[in-house]
Amino acid sequence: MESTIQSREIAPRSSEAMDSQLSRLGNHLITKFHVLMRISQIYDSKNVALQQFIQESLQAINTFIRREGSLGLKIVADDIFLNERRLRYSVEGFTSFKYLLTQWKKRLIGEVLYKGPLDEETLGAFIYILMGLEEGREENALLFNEKLKEHHISSIEVGPLEVSETEEGVYPRKKEDSREVAKKVFFETIGTVKEVITHIKGRQHADVRKLKRLIRKAVHLIMEDESILLGMTTIKNYDEYTFNHSVNVAIYSLAMGRRLAFSRSGLSELGITAMLHDIGKSKIPLEVLNKPGSLDLEEWGQMKKHPLTGVEIVLNLKQLGEVNPKMVIGIFDHHLKNDLSGYPKLFRQKRVSLFGRIIQIADAYDAMTTPRIYKKVPYTPEQALAIMLKERDVHFDSILLKMFIGLVGVYPIGSLVLLDTHEMGIVFKPNTDPQWMDRPQVILIDRDARGKGKKERVDLAEGDGKGHFRRSIMKTLDPNKYHIDIGKYFIGKDGH
Image 1 (cartoon, helix red, strand yellow):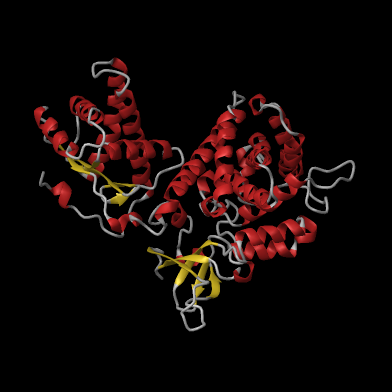
Image 2 (cartoon, rainbow, N blue to C red):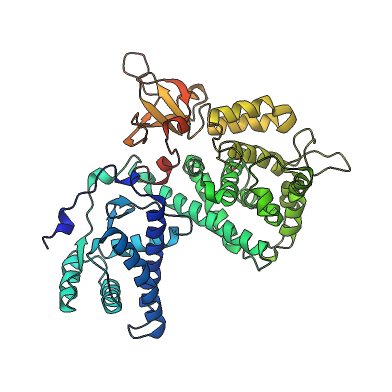
């Protein structure tokens, strides 16, 4: 089929053009497609339940078309473009995003253009034709268009899936599977933590079995290559701070546990403890948690109760199974500080547990490097580590802190650096050789406000053949000043 749908080019800068309202509409739209595709595999086209879902989906689709004039969906590598703009999926929308991507790819469908508003009959026919296609058949797009014509549908055009070598991205192919799994585990875990905490807030039954399964997957990833999951911690979702933070703290804690040679079961227990370390905050009113100014004495009193409240909640989560005392003690201890000057107040002196000391470091580092309601511009990784080093004897176990710095690197993962070649780069992976700790692997980026990726990863330990290094770090930079979203370089193949 020769049509406008196949000749359209996606502009290189399109990923930056999608505004937040359009992004919300897009995520809502993908969710509706996901439900429709699943429902069509259960019910026949005349089913009443299906008709209801079609009605709801039509509203979402036609709202989008009325706003934009048309609706074009295109798959490029592992991204979905809406009207030539890259869709940034939400935490809640990740499952729907992956389902649509997988189902269309299986059927080798890469693009669909809806030229105008749809009706029930048209949308129903479209979904059933799509899901009825044989997987892996190269001529599916052609067959799809022929079937649409048979149904007298001229308002929809379909194009085949196209794969080009330029879409391979900055990461080596051998790591592709692990990186995809890490991305899936990361976003699914954020969604699951959100679900658990929301249920606890509403005094509902909280199912933590899925959380345990996801932690086991995270342990496997950490054992395989810790840098992949550590890269995910650069993703800082301001709107989902509570849940995003819990997952990041778990990742840092697991990486530390691995360096301490924990067993797999020990790592799983540490991961769950770190994931639930702030669960006591679910009982603190949102106006206190999200207060932009300083807390008064009463509010601070509420805040200081959250470790003890967290212990009570975890002890009542029956699906956790037999709770190792190390887990509840770790939650209790995570704000005690190394010199016990933190909270809760102790009646008898004790040493902060190993789980507690690990989580203290992970918790502080992620909190300091993440935008908050009361601190919109966070510390850079380098600034955060410098502050933590100053406070090591009071706040942290100094030996564990040194180990943590070795883990994230002298230039931590996610640091924005200026090289002596006048290039800018984002630290992607620390050098495992102790003598080259100041020579990590970096992703080169353009020196513009958008921080568009060059799709080039370089090793700063690489020589020029004349006894010198090809590139060296001159200094670190603040990504906020350059409007660079660090997290996007760790999410997908070409930085999204």
